[in-house]
Length: 411
Length: 227
Image 1 (cartoon, chains in turn cyan, orange):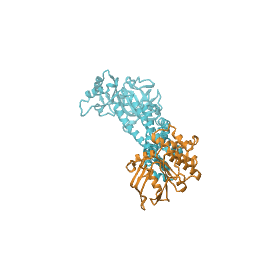
Image 2: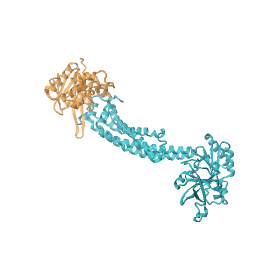
Image 3: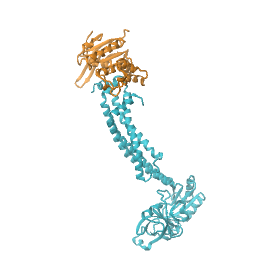
């Protein structure tokens, strides 16, 4: 292209109308920045979710098909035997897993906490203290050692200002009638540790906004002993997840029509979340695309102006033996130059603006420089250039099909 | 020189379809132009001179009749073939010079060579052509709007000659020049004729027409006189 007389003519034409060319390219700059930034933001969100879910990628979550919500205040003498994962089912799970992983039975329910006089809602999990450290990290303080001790999630501790050593009251009737919320139905636990933040996880333990207590304390308060809300299996080798899931399914879900338990893992949740985020990314990309559409109209307008201002020159070129395709090439080059100009500036600005937007919206730029994220900059630039060239096609065709006699006559 | 005409018009008619009705600009014109002829075409405004030049320059094709250039019937040629014939066989010199404003004088002369050989001139031919019409290297770097009328026309002549065409079509080549410069340009055209070029000249000026060996007078699209 360089050294081509038609490219030189296009460069000189752009230089001659530099201000107009720059103004037309600003549309492309905005379009490229919009597409790149939106694309990078969406991808960074996906990558963050994937990263968080991958920390629990080795976990199988087994829940009773008719999930026992286990509201606080649920009587142990009520219909608890009909819901949750039973001791017999847990034994079967343990026998299937064997030495291939760790089986963690968990009780859980939604409840209300009070720290000082500040109330908050969140999840409460009951489990064997020795299982806690299998998948949770106590960053500040120690693990539960006695029945009245508990661990607080990072977000809950932050929002309520809970510190190690504080005591919090836990309601035992979150959804019951007001009379159940009397002080008599509140038990007190001592926070001995704060669990590190985990973000979005696939093991159905949202510890960030919850409290972890011992299983003895939990069943003493809420009943439902040996009827677990869920059983998590942390598998040693992720390649064996499918085989273990199938074996558990075969052993427990003997009745195909009414399976006793539901078995899931990170991959199915990851698929759902990724699909949602991809749709969201496509949507915001489409919004960015609208700005490119506006830019296309602007480029088309400038190219038509360029052709109309150079009618006599086109007539000269055609009358001294220039082929139509060569005239066409000259104007397509001109559109391409506007595209390169706009895409170049847009690409550089996308890096800066994209970084700022991702940092402001997500609070982290951990994934920003990964190829999956940065690829949106060259992609945006390429789309910007293609849009420019497409916008220049009709003006170029119009120029190349002029009658040289009429074109020469024009002043 | 052979007996076969370089350019042959047989019963050529050119009709324009206008909103006000059909207008016949050339009316059954027959004419043979031999190799190395020097012809002046004269006539009042609207007599068909420009239409004749457009036909001879293959910028247009006859409505009826046959126009052959260098043995090729232009009506049977594709648009691309006509473009190539125009590029290779015809040098066009215009009254308003019509240099490409974005190119320097040198690049204007080099341009037809690039069209023909699809590459920049490395043979020095463009510079030699400029030198032959009295434009030096320094002047060659100037854009057309930095040159005088006479200098621009010299550059236009160099551009017309650079692909060594057989035919030179000159449409009022001295019309925009002062008398002295006009005669200088005519001297260049005469010397090109002496070198073997076929020169076809449209002019209003009888003094300029005297340079030609043959004069054709057009009236109302017909040849009224040929001498």
